[in-house]
Amino acid sequence: MASNKPIAIGTAEAQNHISQDLRNNIYSALLAGDGIRNIEASLDRQLAESGFKDELRSYVTHLFRSGQATSVDQARALAMDSIRQQMQGQDDQTSAANRDEQKYDLKIPSKAVVEGTKTVRRELEKVCDITEHDA
Image 1: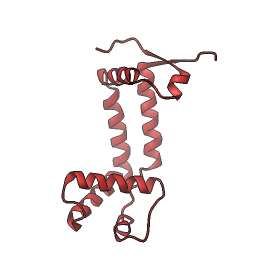
Image 2: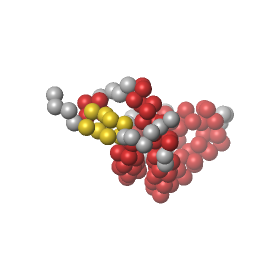
Image 3: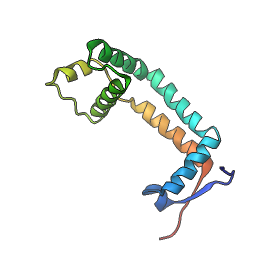
């Protein structure tokens, strides 16, 4: 059960890999309050306002109608792969499938990333106390 006491994290630990126990404590603290719901709501709002959710819905519909996907798991995997490729700028213009993908802008808008990051930070600051230690 999460307590109201902030979780203490040193700056080195916050910037590097954190232990599974600490990660679980942070998740528990976020779940105990409104943290996760606030993060989800912020991201959902930003993605909806930017048109990303509509674009993704159109792309997934295209996957089913074209027969490229016959299950939800397949459509999800193809959509995630396309998002990943577009975010990394790895559009391969030679394949037919990728020409179809180019009709859809599946890059996560930078404003959604920035605002989402701000929300995550605000929510983490509510449950974590990051302290600096001299090296």
